[in-house]
Length: 151
Image (cartoon, rainbow, N blue to C red; front, top):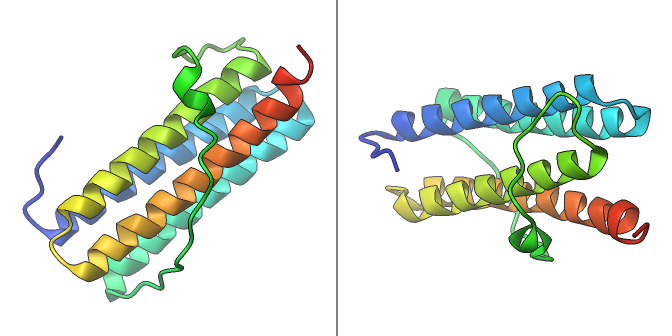
């Protein structure tokens, strides 16, 4: 993992990660044949956009409000095979990719929290980790509802 010298380095890294996630979900939305999934992926892209905006605000103003929450982890993505995104992937494949990406984002923010140089930044990354775990849970519930129950 990249080493960071300043808080700005950490924030820039996280801002870039949120931009990449936002781009990914907009790409999935644009490629969705199902209008409902298009809306779901667009909503996730907008949430990532909100995360990026929060990080930019923190970088500019130095302030952030942290909610103390815990999120259930169904660990579904732990048992699914990694899939590469393709233009014609199925809904199931898109959900698997999304779950794994959110799990990795959670792990990233948890790791950044552990490396944070102060308590305020630690809380910021913990809060972002919680947001990513919420996304993962939503994808796991969607997978359970529409993939596992159909099989």
